[in-house]
Image (cartoon, rainbow over all chains, first blue to last red; front, top):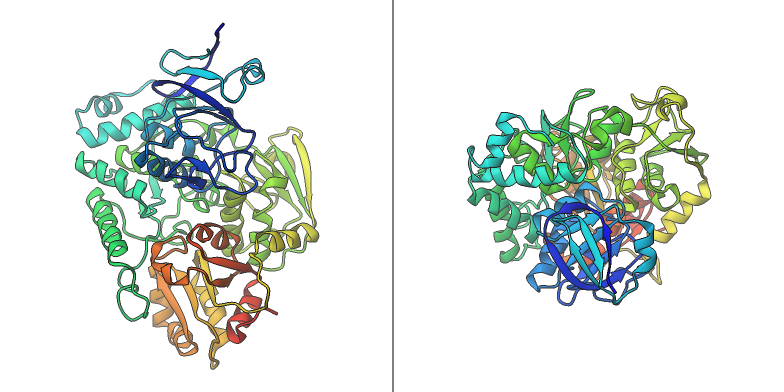
Amino acid sequence: MSKRYSCHKISEGKAQAEAIKTHDRIMFYQVRPEDGVMEEKDHELVGRSIAQKVLLFPGGKGSSVVQQDGLYHLDRFHNMPAALIVQDPDPVLVAGAIIMEIPMVDRLPQEFYDAVKDGDQILVNADEGYVEVL
Amino acid sequence: MILNDEQKAMLNGDLGEGAAYAMKIQFALGEAFDAQRMVPIKRAHVALSNQDGDLWFAEKLVKAGAHCKVAPTVNPGFCTGHFTGACGHPADAEDIAHMIRTDNAYRALGAVLSYNCTPYIATNVPNFGEVCAFSESSATPYVNSVWGARSNRESANSALCAAITGYVPEYGLLLDENRKGDILVRVEADMKTPYEYHLLGMMGDKIGEGIPVFTGLPHTISAEALRNLGAQLNTSGAYGMYHIVGCTPEAPTVEVALGGKKPKYEVVITNEDLQNVEATFSDKRDNDKVDFAMFGCPHFTLEEAQHIAEGVKGKKLAIPMYILVSSHALQMAQRMGIADVLAEAGAEIIADSCPDQPCWHYLKGKVGITESPKCAYYPRRRGIHFIIRDLDTCIQAALTGEVK
């Protein structure tokens, strides 16, 4: 039984994929392009791949080039996340998602975060402003 | 977001495909942050990185015929002149070709080819209240906090788009109500030199998210110290702005800095906190030896180059030393004889370059010494490691080859 939540569009597009959640901020520079595995030591997702997944995370960190360049390298190996769901968007992260054409949304209710588990199938439709847990 | 006629024409492609692409990205950014309109900028600074993603984007804009309406200054790549010849460690041909392509792309876009990460100190200084688009981690907080200009924490890409369209979406730090501090940071540590401001900036985890209001700092703080504070705040976290009570222009008192509200919480920073930063962010080594010294992340000023020259004058360094500066500071150092003193001791003073560039390939596997945690942070992914100490300790280490 699927459940739909409304959200706010940041970067256009839609995608459906498995969810992966983290409480830690992400710098895409620290993700290995060849397989999408998080390399940052002490990161909650260290050793796990974010490639082709719907990534739920608080927001970005790092200097003003790290997100778009990191995503660009992931894209060369087709390992970018399928979609991004964030809580605290910053301009560096947002511009990176828009330029690399990854759907990105925010303003999901806490209820959504409580409901989603790693591995759940999620549909992100940024254009129509909703996220569905399938 | 409501656009004026010129902005609409840009978005529709009437002013060329390049301007349309830049405007499309900025329009999406404005919508994402609920901006109501776009406002003109007077200045921009693009954190050119000379990396694949950066070159891909710049060349895409060139191909689309984009040209900057407001010529932005740009960040360092690396100095092909220095790394092709006399230094004895030539850069790879592939890396040089990449740097030349980057240079050509930004030249075609009409950028100011400054290759300097501290434009706010000399070459691109905004007035109070001026709206601008500054990317680069040390630059955004400096123009907002120290100069009282208004810039969001732009990415390199969004700042370039702003330079092309001449506009930014109005949101965030461009609006009065978002420029107030919300975290009170009481500094009890001894802030003796610009080095302690590096360490203070690395307290991002303890300070948390928001706009910090620092108390307990002197009322007169050097440009170098303020540069360091902003650079490290954006290495340990993401900050567009800070206030220093009695020092920065929008913080005459704690009450004004906080906008008359109570802070969401208070943080106290002690000498012990700063000592922990030094230990935590230094790489470990089982002896006291270091292989080289590197300074200038962000770029060192002429005064800092002079300070090093005084420390090494008439002596010979035991290990290589690299001092990264703006081309302006390099020229002054040459005119004033500082560069000669440094060269006689064995130090290299280099313009246009940055520790996070491929030209340092020959330092892979080595351990250097630096006063900047940011210098230690980014080159780690290139296999270059650093011990962090205050500048005078670094200079002594360069003279003996050992950290005392």
